[in-house]
Image (cartoon, rainbow, N blue to C red; front, side):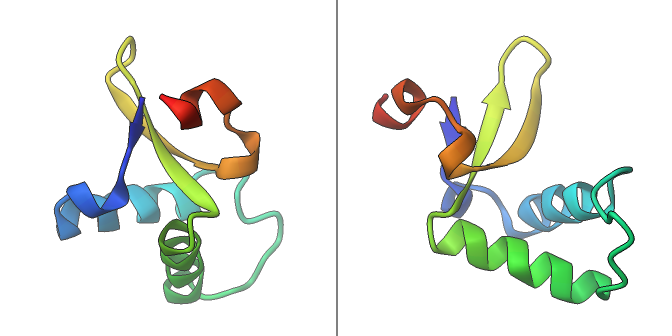
Length: 76
């Protein structure tokens, strides 16, 4: 299920984004400051380039690029 980022409380969204940008394997040697990486993800969400996916089985949210999400999910 896709969750519109506008529906999340500001603190929840901030924690989700920070978790994503600090997760193991996401920096790939990138020395970009945390606040810049967070801003990039926020911008991608606002531009519709990224989406928030909720997995009801695991009860967890994750971020993904819209182009990587199955088309059926976007139409639902």
